[in-house]
Amino acid sequence: RMGENARKRAAEIAALRLGLDLGLTLIDTAEMYADGVAEGMVAEAIHGRRDECFIVSKVLPENSTRAGTIAACERSLKRLKTDRIDLYLLHWRGRPRLEETLAAFEALLASGAIRYWGVSNFDVGDMEELLALPGGTQCASNQVLYNLRRRGIEAGLLPWCRERGIPIMAYSPIEQGRLLHDRVLTAVAIRHRATPAQIAL
Image (tube, rainbow, N blue to C red; front, top):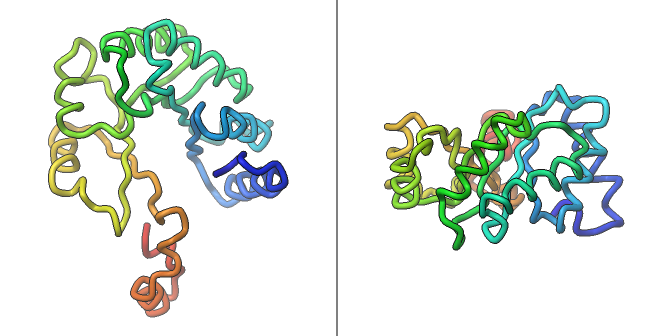
């Protein structure tokens, strides 16, 4: 929910900066998050420290035509106040043809606007379709919901991606904080002198 409450802005930026101080290396955002406000907050948090972090952002499906993806990326770059996005993802499948999105990703790679591209919320069928397209095997990651309570990808998607060398990036790894209050997880954490978040990860 970063960027959705203006009163929390300073604290949220401070949290990102503290994360960088403590060794955080990846920041994941998207044009959708708070209608771009989150990207602006990331820019403020990483000011003067851009090379310390790997920035991930995402294009909305409704913007994922060839021209729309390029324009969305340019808007994200402007909000992020950077010359490159390290990993640019299609947020989820939409109506535009994947060929168009891939053509945009290739153009963005060639221009240096992005370093890698990938997808988010793709199931096995989506991934099979993607990899069958010219250039589809260049997919650097599939970002999906995955944590101790939501392990559905273990039955199909995770082994499928592993067999093909496509990294899975888990989002909501601590279930947006809800796992931190799990009694079993807390007991395990106490036994290991760790936090519930550390055990969950």
